[in-house]
View 1 (cartoon, rainbow, N blue to C red):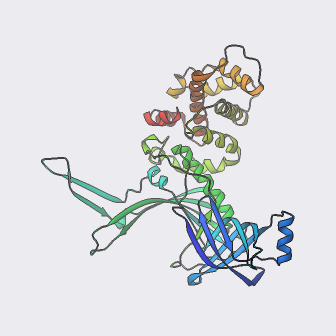
View 2 (tube, rainbow, N blue to C red):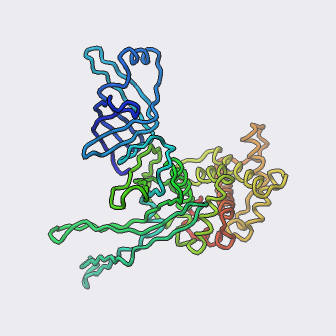
View 3 (cartoon, rainbow, N blue to C red):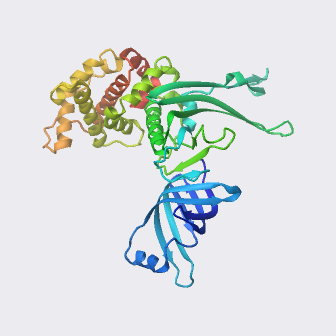
Amino acid sequence: MKKNKEFKGLWYLPSNPENKIGGTLIIKPEKIVLELFGCYHTESESIKRILENKVSTVETIYGDINDNKKITLFNCRESLNINSLNSVHLSTYECLYTLEGLHLNSTEDKFFDKISLFSPIFSQWKQPAIIEKSFYFGELNNKVKKVEVSTDQDSYWKKNFDITEGYQLTLSGESQFNGNFENTEFNFSQTTALSIVCKEKKSFSVLLEKVFLTCKFITLATQIPVLITELFLYNQQNIPQNSDPIKLYFISKKKSTQKVDSTNFLFTYDDISDIFPEVILKWFKESDRLTPIRNHLIASIQQKGYFSSLDFLTIIQSLEGYHQRFIGTDKILKERINDLINNFNAVHLIRNSNIKVDRVVKTRNYYSHFYDRKGNELLGQELLEETNKLRVLLTCCVLSLIGIDNSKINEILNKKNSIKRLF
């Protein structure tokens, strides 16, 4: 979400639509709060709850706001405030999800067949390439003399990919123009949007799982957490085409303040466009088996600004788990690491890395089991350097699992900036 929003209106429980209470819904990226001038309990019930320090949770709250717009709040956690000076009791609900434009009974209602998401990073990972810009410079200096901007309806594009049975992922390029011939300023913008479409109606909680899994793939590619700015839900059969989509808000703890440079991505869509249909399908199909390793990898490759022995342990555990799960032989850690190095010997960065396997194993034992130091465990700068080598090896493992062969992995890692992001 780009900025905070507020909705003033009347709020009530679906089971008691006559008891409507005025209040304000405040939506922030990190918090969704409903503030009411009243409460849904009697005064005695409210006092008892406060004295017993009981936390009440309401599954669903409906809201009616201006222009007959409907709001639904889900998973609402209540806190009460009784003012002894007057009869107005205030109540506050922190909510997990908000739907703008619809009253829905439950997060599990199978009502939607499409969800669209937007994030600035999508447009850098897959360029929209709709708006064309031409710059003309003066003959006597390097100052821009004229700029031409153009867009063509034929430039709009859409690509569909199967991800699991009954689901498709759609990438599309869109552009916008704000202004008219009377204005002195014009604004052109272009974006890449992602959508997930399903053949049968699904709950938005199920569609959100697909969204988050898609975002993890983009995070793997870009090495940067995906900050979703907008989410829209559709019921393409029951809601008229010209009506506004249902907007979904949810609490997100992800904040991306770092400047994004697409040249530092591990890979872009164009880098793997020839194999993307197979790769994204395998990403979803291998989701369950890949989950712990994928999460550890993503956690380890994101830039944190500091390094600790826990980073080393996370990667070494992931490598050990990958070997056990996908190669399946009963071997000691040293043999597992050597197997993985041999599997990716065709990748230049692995072949030339000279990973100190014996010292890596002893260091794992030292930090995992708190053995006494023997004097040859990796510490400080050496530990950081070996961890970076192992991070590249783990990246190769995950890329291989989703269908990228060693030749393409080598091509991806040989990009100077891709390697830099892993170190």
